[in-house]
Image 1: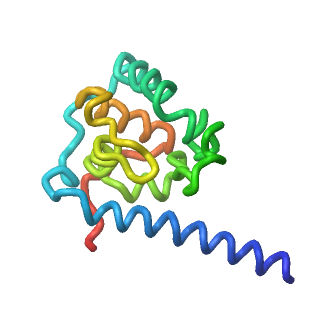
Image 2 (image 1 turned 120 degrees about the vertical axis):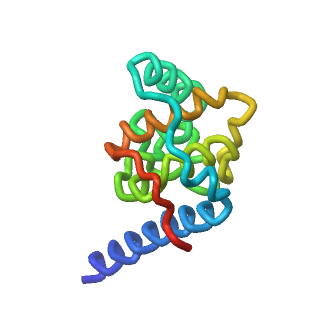
Length: 142
């Protein structure tokens, strides 16, 4: 019984942290960006470039499969979110994901000047493929 209760508490705490991160972050996304549809069409070339950018800039923290278990993740005070989580990613609009990549979210740095705008939109397609979610252009009401 204690094992079950401990596991339940940890699960609830993890869900609360992920939910809080999404809600806190979403409040900061300008509405015109949060509702923006991805202007870059998905293609093999776009996904190949996005994967290269992911491997260079994201894999170290988010891990090979996006689970937040990269080699640097254990050194961080806050665990990177699991971008393979279809519930979390499905609740975010393409614009919100783009904004998060662009502006960063502690401890993740911003990529506004490191990755081109077109490539950041390509990263949105990659995150959708990792999480197996479809584009969502309806922000949650806060």
